[in-house]
Image (cartoon, rainbow, N blue to C red; front, side, top):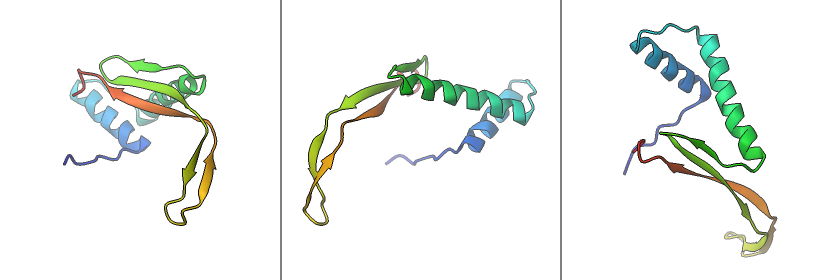
Length: 97
């Protein structure tokens, strides 16, 4: 089983800084934080508008509508109504794997 890496936004910023430095570029941490925030906000904005977002070489986020349904609480066995909602799925690019 593969290990799971959990990234927080500061982890992502630090990783981006390390990659930039390895390539000889110098950026201030606060500038990289702004760039990361802008990219994530752009993805969230597109998904919030119901658009699919593709990052070439990385993967694609797809928004799907999920119909309302009746589910069951596994602990009590009681029926629970689940409202219609949207879900986001991610498919990794072939280049990523």
